[in-house]
Every structure is written in structure tokens, then in C-alpha cells.
Image 1: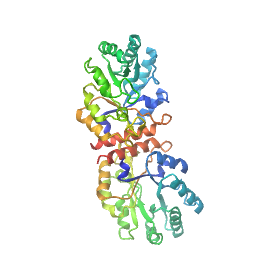
Image 2: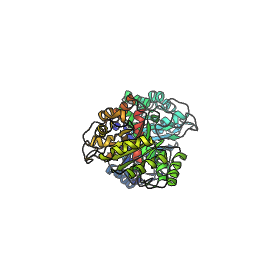
Image 3: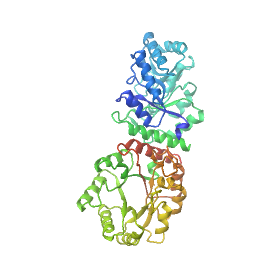
Length: 246
Length: 246
């Protein structure tokens, strides 16, 4: 099945109304093997033991823990160091983040010190720091190669960007990715089941395969917070259907 | 979305643990517009008023009621006539059925009298009457053209048949169709989320498009009776993903 061609997983923001144990089971039911944790499921203030317990729960369930986030980072070295310690304890290879611009030098230092990547997440309309993935890319491309981006194709589409062009433009620094579909290419567009919206998902997937993307593709499904599983399952079904024939 | 290329719908056996009102809402949540009712949702003994109420609920929800079944039919004219009256009252164009062989002459008379089609459903291993769709086809091909079949590709696969070859062989009498995926091409194979099993679903869909199939394609999802929606949604997602790129 399509899973073999890309590393499909869940950004646990999709499951924010459920405790970690349930979020793990729902992720498994979607038939994927990767998960990235939002702080709802593992607070940034967790103790080392709590972090290790959560990481073990995920591993015991047969899932790969690929990162955390989105983590908002002020220019605060102690705060940022704590996030890297958290990621290190959990054995996460990447932190999906939205650092203040003036926090980037600290992030650049930390990725070297911890050998853990940063993937800056773009939030589209309303995000003054990183509306597009290319806005983040411009600020990290001359920093350490572990400083990268996590394009969110939904927010790219909502602000009138071209998801495929953005992916191509940032590809050499693409350390993670958020996949979703949106109802309209405008700020008022909202997440919908993949395949029902306006994003050309087959072209996005063809692009990832053509570029040889080896990273994680996380579904961030904002819709149906109280009952997200059907929409998530439909979205993964759609992705696998496309992947099985392109 | 892929819905535009085929009439995807739900065989309500998938939702047998839920009352009709919920089954309608779950069908709508799957993003499809067609439903065929199993007797759990509308008993064959229902009064005319009950049948009309159910049909109105479905129409009011924006769904098309495409048929009933699977209905098992003994050689009993009064019983079979009642099924046709039920279908007529509900304005169903087709009855998905498993008539005893000696009931076929009665069925052949009724399709003429009521101008409602019969689509004989094959049940694979364990079905002494119609293991394959072609077994049904052989018995109806010289009867009235309204006597036809409803290939169930899961049962075809479970008995070692070739779903694509069967569809081609019975196509001129294909009055409905049950789509699903199964875990193995053997009697012990069970229904799974479409895309996770062993049936070449893209080739099935390509065949339907190539043959110009205008009929209904019903998901009959036997798995997860108590909580079928995620698996059904994933299955429709897969179908739409494939349909969007073939």
C-alpha cells in the first residue's frame, strides 16, 4: 500500500482532545507508523521520566516518534534549551517550531550542540513571522543545514501560495512536512478531508516522490476536534489511493 | 473529487448496528450520495407508511435510495411479490437478491410486472447457489434484461476468482456492485479497509471507467460492526484518491 512510498504519520495536534494512549491507538488505526507530538500529549514541562514513559508507550505501540511541535519559541535561551533537552530525552530527530526571528541565532547554536533539527512551520494568513515556507527558508538557508522548514501546504494554499512550488523551493531544507487539504484558497479556507478540498494533492505527492523525499509527511487535521478519526482515516485513504497509482 | 466519475454509495449492511437515522448521517459523513438498505434499516415486513417515511428520511438527507438487499428469496410468489411491492413503494430501482434457483422464473416474471431490476449477489465460499458473479450470470443471461447481477468483488477474491474478469464477463447484466477489499484470496480472507488488502482496486476502477459503468458502486464494509465509520471513510478516501488520478 501507499505507505511504502512515503513515511505517512500523524501530527498529534489532530488528536488534541484525546489523551496520549488514545492518540496512539487512533494513529495506529489510521494504518500509519509515525507520530509527532504536540505538547497536549507531552508537555514541554514534563519530567525526564514522564518524557521517557511517553516515548516508551509510542515505541511499544510500534510507532516511530519523529518529533514535537509546533513549539513557539521566544528569544529565551533557557526556554529553547529546555525544548532541545525534551527532544533529546524523547529521542526526537526534529523539533517543528515557530521561533521568533531574533531567536534564530540561539536555535542555530542548539541544532549544532544537540544534533537535532529545527523545522520551521509556516502558518499562512495571520502569521507575521512565517506566512509561507519560503519566508522561513530565506532566514535559515545560510544557517546550519539542520535549520530547516516544515511546509504546511494548507496554510500555503490559504494565503494564495502554490504548495508544489513552495516544496520545490525549500526542498533542501525540508525537515518535515504537514499535509492537509483546505476548503478554499483564501484565509477563510478551513481544513477538510484530503481529497475534498482545493489542493492538488496528487501533484504534491508526485513532487515528493520525484524529489526523492525521505522525510516524514504528517497529517495535521484541524477539523472535527471531538471526533477526528473518520476524517483522518479518509485522508490517509486518499493519500494511499493516490500513491498506489502515481 | 472522485465521486464525479462513479456513483459511490453505502450498502447499509455496513451500518447494521445503527438505526436508520444514524446510518444516514454516517453515509453522508463519508461524502457519498447513494445508499442501499438492508432490512435492518427497513424490514421487509414494514407497512407502506413506514417504507414511505424511510424513503423520505433518505431523500430529505440528500441521498439517493438505490435499492435494497441482500434479500434471500425462496420459491414463494407471495414473498417475492411483497419484496417487489416494498421496492416499488420505496421507489427503489433495483433489488439486490439471492433467490433460490427455482425462484428465478418468479423473479423473471416480477421484473417485467414491476419494471424493477434484480441484481443477484454472489457470496463466494459457502454459497451453493452463486459462488461467483458468473454463476449468477449464466442463469439470468437468457432471461429478461432486468434480471442481472451484483458482483461482490470481495467474495469473488475469497473464492479465488478474478474480480476484473468477473466484472467484464457479467457487465451487460451488472445492475449494481459491491466493492470492498479482503485480507487474503482465500475463504478465510476477511474484509479490510480498501487499499490494505489483496484486491487490485485501481484495476477494478479502471475497468469500470473503461466499460462506462453508469451504475451504483456500494461499499459493503463488514468489518468493525460496532464502529465502522473510520474504516468506511478510509475506504472511500482510497477510492477517491485512485479515481482522481486514473
